[in-house]
Image (cartoon, rainbow, N blue to C red; front, side, top):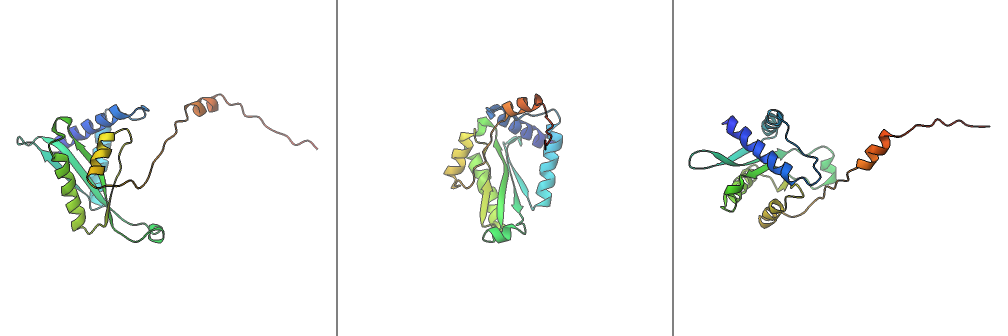
Length: 171
């Protein structure tokens, strides 16, 4: 049911927005149109899959999505050749957390990646979401990369007031 999928993706984005201590994330009114369609397109293009967690009344309360990453020409020279899966989305409504549904969703997508002969699985976590990070660590995932950010508010202000001087060479 696409409407339920849209609803849960919107709830997921609202959840992320609430965590953003830098206030750089938002959910615009048309978020679902772009993001849900982009996600579904990406899943089709990269042998991806989306699983849903449902209640007995068939209400979607959780999702997990993932893709198979295709090695680039350069990556073949940079690392040992492997086939990797990437979890692109994992969300569970707060009232259903702690009931093993998140674990079941992850196990299901991990089985999918195993069937596709992936040797590793990558997952990205929004840094302020410590509970998600802890969940992945308990599930056997390890730190691999760090993605850092520096906000340049002052630089933006300075540039907007910058006067450009022309220099001349004097002989």
